[in-house]
Length: 231
Image 1: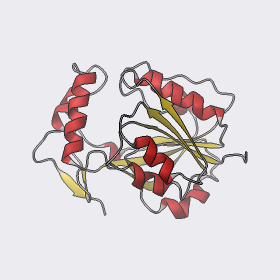
Image 2: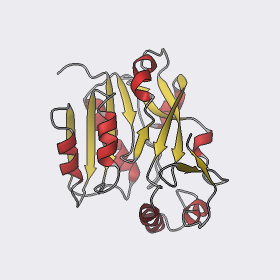
Image 3: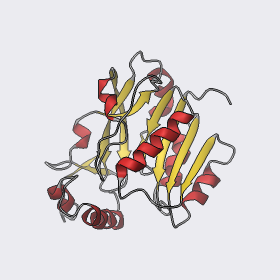
Image 4: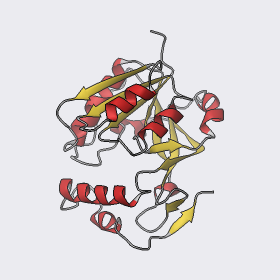
């Protein structure tokens, strides 16, 4: 198999009727290979992946038992399977995250960097056109790693947390990095039904706010959040 330059690695679960197809269609335009860990979906998630990725280099691994209740185990498994494919670069996104279209023209130059990680800003969309901006929702104000060069000799470990353990190993913070002006749109909060489902899931998996911010969990249901247009 030809050496993979940029691999997109994803964990998906029950993404039917959400943003999965839109996200995969976008990613196909700028990555070389897509690895999908399906965490025991009970809907048509896998079928959507297989349809969209027909004739595109990919691999789908199906978990028969969900690992999501312990995200450290899930992310460790995802990372191990990603490294087996030995790509040059690793991009990790969720099924509801899409780069703005400037990624198509800038990706080649971006991957020519001498740095080992690339940081982006993520915007939490609360509608199709607006993102949330307040004291609890401000991810877009800072840069976070979403892409890293494969460092084959580096030992990797994940934060031991049942939820919110991070998508990359802890060691990514030791790498040199570049900040990108390409913005990442997080659409997972943009519909009321999805916000309701996420709110209920967080309270079920982290009822005491041990791994996340309980104030932020509760704010998901705010009736009049502060929103800004995504220009």
